[in-house]
Image (cartoon, rainbow, N blue to C red; front, side, top):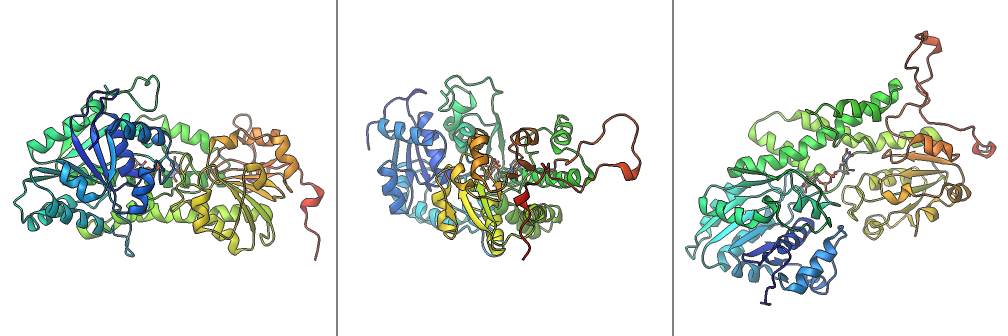
Length: 496
Ligand code: UGA
């Protein structure tokens, strides 16, 4: 082992291992090292491990690269195989994948393998900390399973410590959490967990994101039993997904009624009991968390004998977003066969290269099936999208993607798209039309620059807010939802 140097947050006094070097594991390992611990980050994928040892991260996450480099250089972060990590550390975070099975349930086989490895490898006391998202009662099962395989008479505890790290802002979320949830039933394990998180809980760590941290409330420490901690995780993700599907329904109502979702969301979210966050409508939620966690939670509900049909609706509303967005494109362009469509954004959200369950990919597949020609650009996600979707044209910039386009589709709200030079863009496209699946632009800005605009939940015509009420026949045609400019002569296809 390398000598461990003191870091900006103090001296690393705890030996921690993190099993699984994916989004959650690698971020957790690097951040735990940054707050002063000595961390062994382990993975059984030797290719990934070798890349990490060579300083290459398997995914893009803001600030993580620097954090890994700094902590590897100081000796506080090392990469190794799981057996080595388990042998050396008292605290073992399990961050392995729990992908969905065919029936929607989480596949816990990787967790089971780690449990067996712990029992065959460890000597002395161990705290086994479940961080992967798992069904309620998994910690109990884990404890039972560890007991069965405990041939060496190991003393151990099992803790549930769910993560709330959003991709794209995971490092910031680690340093400034709203809460740290610890589900543990032994005083020894609770004491150890408190010690691990002490710098974050006391807000005394030097944050790896801000030069000067904004004043924030001290994170709440929630100590509970393992079942409750596990349910906090599933219920949080499901609630957030429900909020998104709810605002998407309201956005549909806005389009149908001629109202403005931005104002409606502001009005709803100004109620402190509701809050502004997660009220952005769009093409639906994606990523490796919400879609799979929601499905898994529905299965958990079924097994527990609870009626979770509410969550099934949340999922259905989300699935419908793809078809609804394609219908919008069809409404503007009529026949899609042979049309060139520029896609801005492939990742399931900005600041990540993750395209797993990304709504953009579903929309592209749907458009390809109707014969459209797709030209895509994303600042970070193209190499990953290319593996799933080799049949489209990948471009080096948003401008290149727009060349000859009949419409530009905004599918991820990357901030660089906001900086677009409209004059240059106007010269490149075939038709000046932005179909904005994320409400990245304001309709006024787009129209002022000579493009037509279609957003989500935005009224097409100004609705009179005062004055004499109009008779039915005089009401604006709210079915005309795009913000239109007069069509250029070449916008009408030649008769065949
Ligand atoms: C989510 C949770 O926010 C984290 O707290 C949790 O730890 C993580 O899942 C996990 O379980 O590991 P993440 O999936 O990285 O994090 O991203 P979010 O920021 O939650 O966004 C999820 C999806 O919802 C994205 O596709 C995003 O575009 C969409 N979204 C989000 C909306 O459509 N509207 C909104 O208002 C907010």
